[in-house]
Length: 310
Image: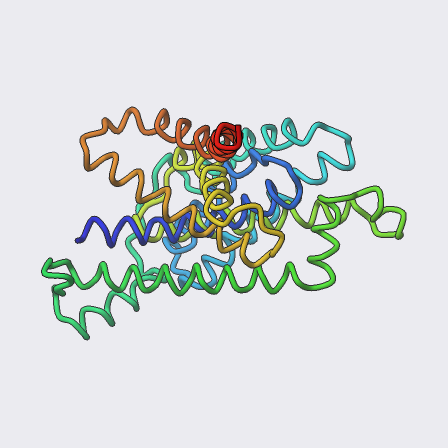
């Protein structure tokens, strides 16, 4: 039970990452590699500030601001200097590795202070005692508090993103990804919309990194490797779950569902004896299956329908 609670909590933290990837990948059709650098950047800034005695809320906000600046730099390189979007992200991601090391002062920085999760864990222990029984299984009550905390935070982030994308500014951002030429004809700067979109995307990615570091009680310079693939897997799985919908809130919720499902699949694979060294391979296979699977199933259904009518 403890493993299930921890898996769901981590899945909800990575759901915030999926929201950021959703912005860049689905709204702008741009797989932004900056995420591999902004995820540990959010963790590094938060861990460093907590070590300096900052409170968890301002430290987390500072981590989000760092990710937002990283995304803005990627956007500026892309739109002002006409550098390919993928290459812009790679350049910033590469530079952020050194920045993260500078911020932390080492490759790994433990967090020994109170975090955003501490009040939830304390409340759960005060309410349930040291352990809680769920479906006949016992688990540390702090894990329940952790799950509630991640559920609250990911829900708030999801609602705010849905509301923002429904605003006039959010609609302009979506239009930039759908039809930039039409938006320019209406007198709106697509360059500004692109920079803003990448900044918001990496702000959410950095928030996810900050929450993950606080959950794991450490920040590491290597913790961002492959997060873009995890985020893409979550978004693609989410689209597979909800289908080709045009509703923005449903598409956003689909990304969240995809992140939780992805972590559950990973936990099941590890529980079945998967070597941790094969995790990236499994991730790639899951992403590939989510991309080609729906089309393959539709083609198979059409063939069966054709044979039935023949």
